[in-house]
Each structure stands twice: as C-alpha cells, then as structure tokens.
Image (tube, rainbow, N blue to C red; front, side):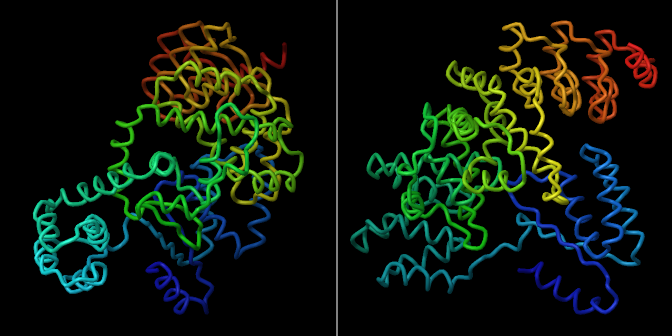
Length: 481
C-alpha cells in the first residue's frame, strides 16, 4: 500500500518528463537472487526504449547462456546513462510498519468476541501490548471456559511479554491435536508444507502437494482436499491472500515457532517433502520428456500446478537430511530417468529467462538429450549422498554432460561453491584441468577462483591444478585433436 502511494506521487511529479519509475517487490520466503532483481529493473527500463530493447535481446540471443551479475550491471548502467533521473521503489514485505492496536481497540475486539462483559479482559489488555493476533488467539483459548471465574483463572495463568505468543501458538497446536485423526493429520501436513517450503505456495500448489501419494504414478484428483477444509483444520493459523492466491501464516513468528516443533514431532519432515516432490516429478505425465514448443510448455505448467515447485526445489529438501534407503532409491530412479530429467531441466531453465519467456530460449535446455546426466545433475543440486551413491556404483567422475551448462560434475560443483561435494570427485581422481567449451568457465580453477571460493581453490591446487594453463592453448589443442 505504501509503495503504491509513493509510485503515484512520483508519477504525478515526473510523468511530463518521462522519468522512469521502477518497482521491485521483495517477498518473504521467495527465491530472489541478485540477477532476478537486476533483471526486473532492466526489463522495466527497456519497456520505454524499444530500440535499446531490441539490441539487448539480440546480444542475449547470441550469447546462448545466462548473463552474469557483472554483465547485467553493465547493461543496466548503459540504460541508466540515458536518463538524468531514475526512481526505484523497493517494497520489502519484511520491512513494513508494525501494526499495533491500542487498548480501546483490543478491548472492543475482546468484548465482541466473548459476547460477555467479563472484567478480567480489561486487566489483560492493560498488562500487555498485544497485537490483534495475540488477542484473537487468547480469545480462542477462552472459548471453552464457561464461567467468569474460569475465565479469570485462565487469564491469570497466561504468560505475559515475549512468552505470550509462544504460549498462544502452543494452545493452537493443542487444539489441532484434539481434532479427529483425519483433521489432525491434514493440519500437520499443511503446516509442514507452509513451514518448510522454499517459497510461498499458491492454493493449487498446496492442494496438489497434499494430494500426492508415495508410490503412485499419477495424481488422484479425488484425493485433493477443499481449501475450506485445509484452512479450517489449521485453527486460524493460516490465511489465503485473495489477490495472489498465496497461502501463508497469519504472522511470520508462527513459522519460526513451527520450524522446531514440527521437526521434533517428525524428524523426517524434510525428507517427506522431498519424496512428495520426486514422486510428482516421476508421474507418467512427464515421461514424454521436455515440451517442443511454448504452448505445450505453458499447458504443462497450467495442468500440473506443483510441477514448477517440485522441479526447482526437490533437492533443497534432500540436502538437510540423512537420506533413508527409500528416499535414496527414489532419487536414484529420478536421476536415471532421462525423460523426467529433461522435463525438470526445462522447467528450471524457464525461470532463468525472465526478460522474455516467450522467446523460447528455455525450450533449448530440454530439447537436446542430456548425456551421462545422473552424476552431473546430482552434483549440480548439491546432493552429497546421491553423488556418493553414484560414485560407489561406478559413475565416471570425468564424464562430460553434453549440452549442459558446465560440462562435468567437478565444474558444476566448483561454480556453485559446493565444497563438500567437490571433494568427492577429487578423491576419485577427477581431472582438475578438464576443459569444457560450454558455460562461462572453461577450466575448473577459473570457475572457483572467479566466484571467490577460496577453499575450493585450495582443494584444486592440492590435487595439482595447473595455475599456468591458458584457455586459448587448451582450445587450440582440443581443435587440433
């Protein structure tokens, strides 16, 4: 709301001289990198200059790979130099003004909810600077108190200060525990998904995620829960944003609370989410491989709402846990399924081309066969246990993943800075001077040093990496062969 007011004011004072006004929305629990934010600004600047936009698009097309932050900054600086003034409005959801209710507001709320003029309510308001959220949770805890004396006793025992919210959340969790087994299970699974998701989930993403059944090859649409039931069983802890269809907690502190509570109750919660993601990716509908045109790709995303999330974040849920045998087997099956991997690579590549999705650049990522992909893809995703499993099975640590962005598993992990995974191919004798013409870095040592990964550079040097090698010489030698 505040950002909208600011933008409107800036427009009123600048619309006559065509001064650009750019807007960035930084959302909590979303996967926004520096490149994403720079791209958003650049895209908005290019809208006002179609001549510059055309030349920038041609450069992007010729390059055939994602620009680095430095390259984006150069293009951004060039476009900024065309204007004397540029306004950039940043809307950070975590930096919004805190809404605090005054005593009269909360007293009115309490009286309206209790439908009784219990005097203890006034005392509780005076002794606490609670938000409406805390007031609402407190009222919920009083609903089963049937007399004024019981209400006073309950209020006298309720904590004050910083412990009040945690106690309120505990009460809500107790309410969930007292539900019927089916409702209790649905509530806990819902809270787990919202708590541990790598980004905010939409209504349809959450509904599909909850409907996934391990071991099945397709989604049973009769197993999808109604949104009203999902919200109801969570005892007022979650809300749905009507404009964005995003499901989230009513307050960010709830997520912090449940991160520890849910993990205590179910130590395998992250693995359960990973298994659900991989089960979804292995559905029959994705066995046809990547889509050949933009219309089919958009249709796939539309018909399978959970595909984008599962493709991009399955590995994030594998990393924090010690995989069970069933999870390792599922990952192994996934990595050796070329059609599924091609589908996933296409989906993850789509997010990297945000300036102009309709250009179809991301289709190239899945249109070619990815050879010897399991070890490379596991390394790229920082899946240490899976890399170990594949190496134990005899995977070639020097195998070149043709048409990939980085070439070898060692290249991929060095570029990404995955120190623990880098050690694995090195211990098995991976070629530290391996050369690849794909991607931004032809040599592993250049990849690690350019990104500032000091420890990885030391590991490579300890294994004999040649600090004097020149890319031009390697390229000539390769062509000569």
